[in-house]
Length: 248
Image: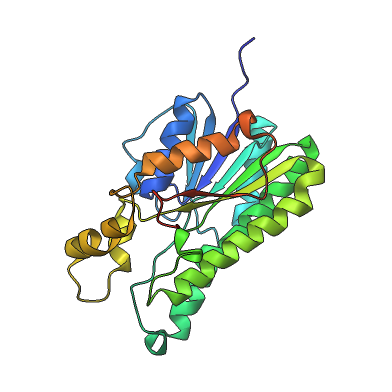
């Protein structure tokens, strides 16, 4: 008997990792809903099983309305992948402004609260679901000058673990992925202001990965696919390092 397609929501859909996650889920025959402030990067990705919304996921009422629309249309909500995130340019703590701090916390942490709060009631109705948070290996293996970003990703992991124990009785699994330095546009944004981005990628980030290369978005997409799948039915509250050994 054919497996029924899952309904998977992906935030940060317009980013490198978000797109790779969406492409992998479509390959698996799932129904995918992409959310991002801009979906221009997905304009050339057309598929009958893909629906995208341009939305600021910090707008709680709008997010709630979208999740209700998705559930009304499909009658189920199988997975949520929080792939949205922003970087911090390497900056000494005394030069980090309160606006810098608040923006990182809003996008990297508050967004998780809003989207997860929106999806959980639907998953509880069906007594099944999987939520995946894309955090960062920097939460456990920090680099200088990224203190606000690191704090936001540490909060993301802790929030996810807290949800895992809370939602386990409802058969909702909640897990974190810690990517290592990834070959996406976002990586260059971690370079200090005025630094040579390409040189920094090679001399700092590639050199920090024991296997000798940057993480590919497809590496993250594969890990997400596993955590969303029934093969991971007993995996919850875990943090999966997809980092080429960066965290060692």
